[in-house]
Amino acid sequence: MADAQQALDVQTARQVAHWVLAAARLDLDELASPEAWGHLERYLGVSLRRHLTGVIERLAAQARVLSTLQREARSPTARAEVRRRLLEFQRQYLRTERTLEFFADAINCRTNPRVAAALRACDTLAQRSMALLLDAIGKTTPPAVTYLGEGRGASILKAHQRLWDGGEICPVAAIKVTRHNLLRPTALIHEAGHQVAHIVGWNDELAAALAQGLQRDGASTELAGIWAGWASEIAADSFSFAHTGFASVAALHDVLDGDPASVFRHLPGDPHPISYVRVLLGVQMCRHCYGDGPWDTLALSWTGTHRLERAPSETRAIVRDSSALLGSVVRVALESPMRAFQGRALRSIVMPERVSPAALNELGARIGNALFTSAHWLWTEPLRILGLTGLQIAMTPHESEPILELQRQSMLRLGGALQTA
Image (tube, rainbow, N blue to C red; front, top):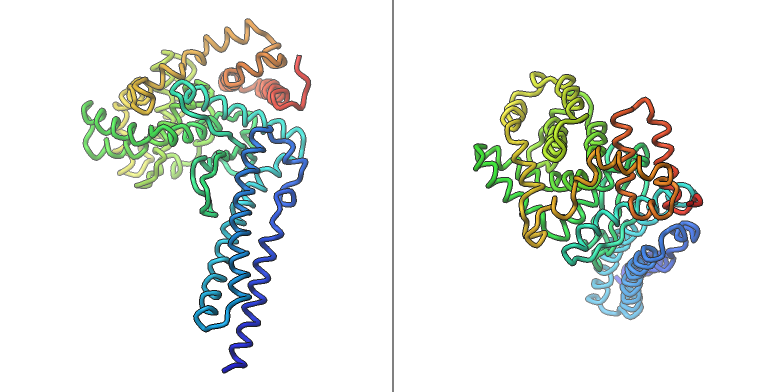
């Protein structure tokens, strides 16, 4: 029995040493290069480093406790406690590692100076879009770190939540920008909208307003409930539209376009609206705020390409019955006063009129090329610049290359890789 216990003690000691030393080797400057850290804005780098340092220090404190328990264990009860703590420490190490590796991958995107500059510009776009609303209602805007990722759509790991390590809430929002849309990052503003909705409690309030408002306008309880279940995505789409106008709708169309199975897919419980009606909802936002325009052509193409008769019967019924409700959804999302906004409507804080085609074209004509080269205009109007180039691409796709080059240069200048005028 003594020999068996001694053998177990040796195995336990080795495993404790392995995991404790692994935790001791966690170093922020080894996970991401100092150069990559240097490509973060100072306020963002300080906030993120402080949080991740705390993540490592909490793990180190647990490691010290485990080491002490293992050295001092003499009784069967004490040895059993070491074994329990060891298994829990392994799990905590892996959770901590996941948090650290996530941010390491995000930061290491910035080793290339031009990519780093473009992502710093994206940080600014996200930050500015959130601050425009949150400042107006006295809320603090969290820092945002953007990173390149694969796939069709963007995503967000929201600030003010506990991450995989389970420690303190993370103060930084991490937003994935897809590589193919780096120069058309209106989806970045959609993700920032998710962060704002989380901070102010907009989603639940919007869901309740949709359920009530749509039933009042003739929707069945079931259909109104379906739309209420889409509130979080409707909120983010509305936020992006208010900041970038038709550019956000055209970009959303291009991401959601696909075969009938994807365009008409309806998954109960999925917060994303059926793609078919989601695009038409964006069109309705344009019509509501701007009247007739190029979005009508987009809608004609969308409904012509994706014939409703190709949809599964249950989806077809939802889409058909929803067509008369789009105006009501837009009015609730854009025009309804919300407690989340201290009694104001989204449209009264983030005014979509500022990114109407007329307003954007007037801005471009008045400022000229300086809009894309001047430090003043790049700093004060980055969201409207994004809205303008997105509008131009939507209306003149054959000129996409020079338009995207202007957007690229404006982002590189905003991010510090090119000299501003």
